[in-house]
Every structure is written in structure tokens, then in C-alpha cells.
Length: 227
Image 1 (cartoon, one colour):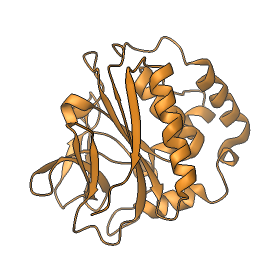
Image 2 (cartoon, rainbow, N blue to C red; image 1 turned 180 degrees about the vertical axis):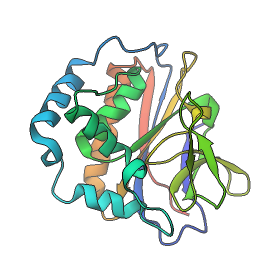
Image 3 (tube, rainbow, N blue to C red; image 1 turned 45 degrees about the horizontal axis):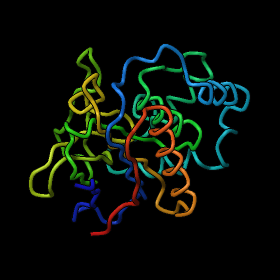
Image 4 (cartoon, rainbow, N blue to C red; image 1 turned 120 degrees about the horizontal axis):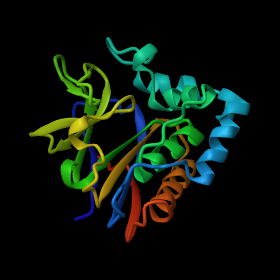
């Protein structure tokens, strides 16, 4: 079954564009012993250029995409792409496993935050919506939680029955990549006015990395489905 990403009927206006990327039959995602040469070069470029790595205005446009109600995209709630740039500048860029490294590479270079999930754990039906009051999930092995109220997020399941699993800041532990992962699904979040051709380009690049870095037997992408 081909994965789908749909918009919840209550999300109006839709604050973003999104690319859905998936891959089947990846190699066992063992911990990375070092960064892929392409990613190591990108991290060095980020150290030299800082925020100038991204087109002018990218940081604020991405933050505006998340700003809603009580949610403020700053501090610990800033987009994952900003965390990655800060890590590169501080010489602490994470090396995790090939699929997560691919996600981080695309996010760092584009300035767009991304989520990546174990395909078996999240299922093929994903939904884009805002977090509800009281919703939260654990995002790291230490058991720390993120408050999802008013935050743009991806949930697994249907509009009538769904559970949050990722967002442009931090993803849920419940659907993260594990040693048993063989299929992955990722979402790349872009501002609503982001050019289709440019988003397609990043999605194709992501597909290519899932093939070359992760050994996927098949991989593809699509843009956000309409209601």
C-alpha cells in the first residue's frame, strides 16, 4: 500500500506544504560510526556559513509556519532544522543511523524540518493537524515529553482515530527508527508559499539518499494530498 498524508478537516487554513517520502527494504539501520562524506562536507559548510546556508528569510518563514495559538517556535520549541544548524556550529552534529542521518542532511541543507518514522510502527495513513489541549508524547529515551497543544503535527491513523507521532520539532519515541526497521516514511515540512519545484527537488534528493545510504530496494515521494 502506498503511504498517504492527508489534511484534517479542521486545519484551515493549511499553514504548510509537505512532501511525503518513503522507502522499502532498507538495510538494518545500525548506529552510524561516522557521518557520510556528503554529510560531513555539508556540516563543514554549515560551520562556515551559519544561517547564510539557507535562502534569506527561511528561518522566519519556517517559524511562522509553526506559530499558532499558544505555540511559540522558539527556545526548546524551535524547528528541528534550527537545532541541527546549532549542532553543526557547535561541533556536535548528531550521527544516529543512516535513515535518520539522511533526514538530518536534507533538513540541515534545506532549512526545512523533517520527521522520519518506522513504516511498520506508523502505518501507511498519516494525517496533518494541530495538537489538541493535553496532547503530548515522549520524544527521547530519558522519557521527556513535548506539549503538542496548537503545534502542527503528523498523526498516524484516520481523521476519526489517530495518534500523534511526529512534528517539525521532535518526533515520538513510539514510531522512531529501530534496529528492526526495514520500511521508513518521512515528512518534510515547508512554508505554505514554498515553490513546488523546489520542494519536489528536496523530496527527490531525500529518495536518493535513502537508496544510496540505506540500501532501499524501492523509494518514492509525493506532495501533500488535498482534502
